[in-house]
Image 1 (cartoon, helix red, strand yellow):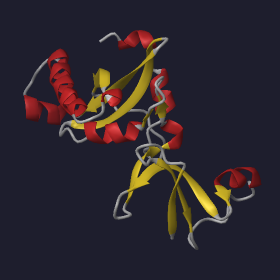
Image 2 (spheres, rainbow, N blue to C red; image 1 turned 120 degrees about the horizontal axis):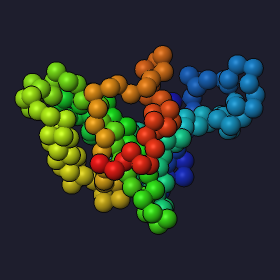
Image 3 (spheres, helix red, strand yellow; image 1 turned 90 degrees about the vertical axis):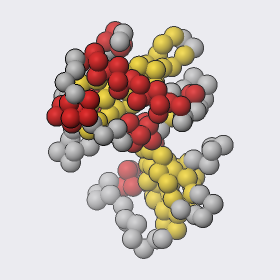
Amino acid sequence: MEVKIENPNEEGIGEIIVKGPSVMLGYYENEKETKKVLKDGWFNTGDYGYLDKDNFLYMAGRKKDTIVLKNGKNVYPQEIEFLINKIPYVTESIVYQREESKTDTMLCAKIVYNNDLIKQYLGDKTQEEYKNIIWNEMKNINKNLPIYKHIKKIIITDTPLIKTTTQKVKRYEELEKHPKSSLKI
């Protein structure tokens, strides 16, 4: 299997394209969609990633989910969600953008915690106390990210995110539940 990074940015991140005998021949009876993803035998995966100095492939996120900030920087939500989901009592999260002003885009996170685990780790507390503790965890995550990737607002809940039958988060449906006004946290 051959792997290349198409149009890498200054960080080396670009679309992952692959070529080889195991790559699909096309979408069944859908030539239009096939032409979008297969070009000269290369399959455009729709995933962003990079190759390190040893040619190990790392995925950064889905092309369709990329957040492009007003300064032109790209943020890959899955990259930050992975870090948030490492918090022991967090079951899942979703990172999204909200316009703070005409010149600024704010990154936000909806964080779902496991009710039993959070009590086990932190004791029985109010929702506001949990939020403050999770916000401190988020600040620690922010310390290790470039400033443009910092999460500035959070929503916490114990209600699972909306998912497909294959358990993928329905990102856009989930975001429709949170109008801009609900972010005043």
